[in-house]
Structures are given as structure tokens and as C-alpha cells.
Image 1 (cartoon, rainbow, N blue to C red):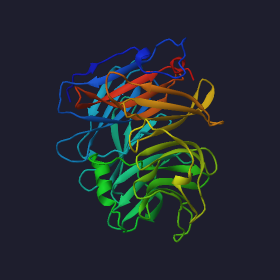
Image 2 (tube, rainbow, N blue to C red):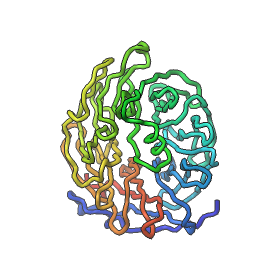
Image 3 (cartoon, rainbow, N blue to C red):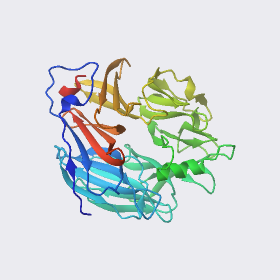
Length: 400
């Protein structure tokens, strides 16, 4: 696909107002907006990973003509942000889960088949070249995925609309199923099917579907179970009749929005409730079968500047020799906000706001090889064309 890529390079010093600004920091980062001359193309960035050459792979959703489900766009940029390759994948691959799954130097994308709704596992080389590794047709509507570090397999949350179930399945990167467990959604007065379809097409509310491993043999998923979007904990080895533990929400209105395991049954998290957003650097969750709590009981900090039911990226990072929890989200003023907490004391260390001239919406954050961070965001060109933006900040610019 021929493209004309235009770059907008701004000095890192105008990125934001930093409440704890390091005045000695030298601006060595960048902001780049990736525009092109085809106004019909629309991109929604999803995730970013750094490659061994200090460049970056960027995963995005792309509007395609043939389907309501978004296509998949892979871009490789070098360490200075210049584009090395960009490809819109075959339109058979749609609705990628919103994260690149990294195992060493390998990266994978989990996505859906446009026609039969089954699940693909694609490998993305550091060059940006993509190869199909597996197709599992019995796993339909993939919603989230994460690497199981204990065995290098992929844990996938997916939806069974016929049996009205959420399933969590562990598969090898070649598609061999090694474990699976189903959780009943129920058929109460809240119908989840249309919200899930709207989530996958991008035409409705984006839900914080998540899954991963908490500790030991305890896994978790943030998804629909027993009529509501809840954070559920389980063990693949439990008996079939054993119910999951749950930090329950209410329908899709009061939900957990991010999770980082912190050892045992401790997590760092965030939640939204009826439009309000809360940062929670420390919480405990139930892990024994059928035990439950309410997400509304998790005490945290109300952040009034975030947009309603804000998407949240949460990462445990090592910055400037300190373990920190970095929360990233979108403000009502259309900036990306970073709230950084000490991972031990849970005290707020700093806040930073990115973006001034254009509107921005947070997509994800990562730590970079040089000890800084990269922030992936969506921006609007001419107020209506959705484009990819990358902020790169060095550790000196962060000042944390």
C-alpha cells in the first residue's frame, strides 16, 4: 500500500506541564504524528513494543470497507520515529485484541477471522513482517490475551454467544489448546451480546477486557460473568462445579479498568463507576472458589479530570532506579495524563500531561531501553482524521 507519511516533530519541552518538572532535563525525546494523503484512511493505535534495534512496532486498528470489524495495521519505526515499514494486513484478519503479546524477541497478535469469527495467532517480526502461526476456529470472538510467562503460552479470553459464556483458554503459539474454562454470563435483564459486538467493531463503548496470571496457579479475567463485568479469579485445575472468585461490578457501569499483579492476591488497579474514575495503587482480591467482594469497596483516589469511564493503561516500571506504577489515561481536555506512584509506599510521585495543540487520547505506554517511556496515542488531524501519535520521553525528561 503506497503511502505518503508526513512527520510532525515537536520539541519534547512543550509536551506538557509537569507538576514536578526536572529543570535540568535535556529535551531528547520526540512527538511524531503519522499523517498521510488519503483522508479516507482511519487508524486507532492499540499498542507499542520496542525492538532490539531501539525502534518500535505499533499495532493499530484500521477502518476497512469490506467489514464493520476493523482491519489490522502494523507499522515499524526506528529509534527516532521515522517509518521503516507499514502494512495493512489481509482483510480476513480483523478485531485484534488491543495488545502485542511479547515473549523475548517474539511478538504476537491475537485477532479474529472476518468470516467465521475464529481466532488467529500471528507472529510479528521485528521488521514488521507478519506470519500466521495458528488458527483455532472453535475459539470465537477473542476479547483479550496475555502471555503466560511460566510456559510461554498465550491465555485468551473469548466469548461463546451460543452458550452465553465467557471462556479463558490457554494455547501454545501454534494453536494447541492446553487448558480451558467456561464461565456463565447468565441471561438476566442485561444483554451482553450487542455490547460485545459494538466493542469489537469499535462502534460503541470499549470495555476493559483483561486476563492474565495473578500468582501460582491463580489466573484472572476481567469480563462478563453472572450478568456483570467483573474481575474473576480461578484455577484451571478446579473442579467443573467450582465457581470463580470475583470482585464484582454492576452491569457495565461499575467496573475494574486495569490490573497489575503485585504478588499473592494483591494488585494495583483502577476502576470506573457511573462516569467517575479511581486510581487504586493497592488492593486485595478474593482467590478461593465462590468468594466474592465488590469493586466499589476498593478504596482509591478519585481523578476528576479523566473522561467518563476512562480507558486506563497501567504498568509496573523501573524508572531512575525506582519501582513505580504508571497510570495513563485521557483527560477531559484531550490530553494524555500520566500519574506515577511509588510501587512500595503507594505515594504519588509526579503527574505529567502530554499534548497541547492537538487533541490526544491515550492508547498505551511502555518502558524504553534507555530507561524512559514511550506513549502511544490517537490524535485527530484537521479535527476529524484519526491518526497515530507517539511521544518518546527520556528518563531525564521524566524527572521521577
